[in-house]
Image (cartoon, rainbow, N blue to C red; front, side, top):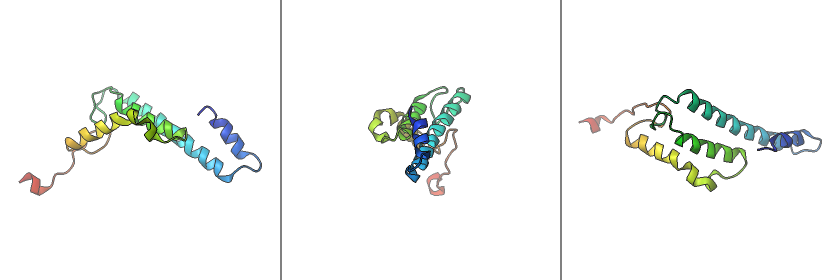
Length: 115
């Protein structure tokens, strides 16, 4: 990601591929999303996010691993071990009947299940 500024400058140069600026914008968007995730965690360290303990950064590491891999132009699946905490959090939310959101939202139950 260190060369992202150079990539953007080269994309604006004469004879550059017209899609290069779109590619650079996409990479900046991935970095922006990573920054938003850090701010979400930092502003809510006292709350349980994604069903984890307050202040837990496991989900954040997984999110950053995915987003930074995308910003770097690599396949996030190559860093599968980093992504496991996100899968664990999603599975725990599902088992608890909660929506996959940062703050808990109970899923509606089927009336037949309630009987």
